[in-house]
Amino acid sequence: MTFTSDTKSIVVGGTSGIGKAVVNAVRERAGTVVAVSRSTGLDVSDDAAVAAYFDNQGPVDHVIFTAGSFAPGGAVAELTIDDAKQAFDVKFWGSIATAKAAAKYIKPGGTITLTSGFLARRTVPGTYVKTAMNAAIEATTKILAKELAPIRVNVVSPGLTDTDAYAGMDQPARTSMLDRAAATLPAGKVGSAGDLAQGYLFAIDNPFVTGAVIDIDGGALIN
Image 1 (tube, rainbow, N blue to C red):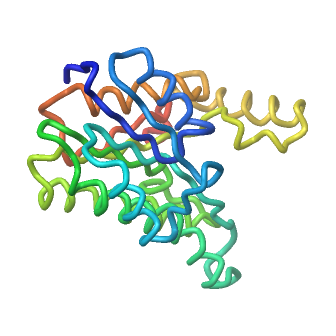
Image 2 (image 1 turned 180 degrees about the vertical axis):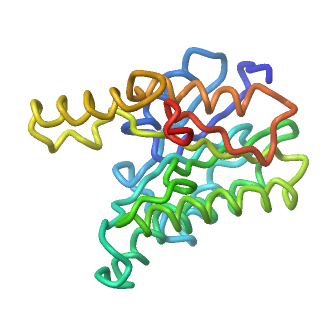
Image 3 (image 1 turned 180 degrees about the horizontal axis):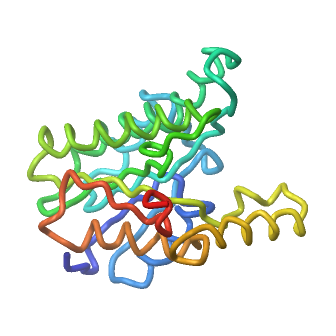
């Protein structure tokens, strides 16, 4: 899609990690890009707040949702439902609230791009919250692509990505963890936030892509 001085993009979750990389990539193009997140005052788990935010923003071309949530790990029998619900409130319901609110203001030729994760289709014991949440986002993206057409709706599914989500780890432990993961992947590396940003640009740029799950996982799903 052509970016002009009038093009407006909003990245929800755009102040850190993959979202920040998307913001930086879009800023290299014409137009304006707005980064919004909890740190800027938007709680995506509050659907009324999300609706009010987009009412105030008005017409927009591209909306990208990269906001994540802490998804507790553990066996199904061990985790509380409340903990699982909190994760869903941010990433799943936040995605839906954003798509619903933004759709009223998307200009012709515009897009909505959500974010899932490779565990949506990878069976790993102890990760049911992430698996269920990401699978739900991927399934709902296809429904949205039908219901909101001609707005194009897609979802990017990242694999292991080296972002500030791991900032709390001891640096040697973090490096060791990422190196071990890289050695198991067909791509021979873990993802960077910049690698992932290219997937969101692809979803925006290609006018023949909608309802798609765009895997950027270093080959994790074929392992």
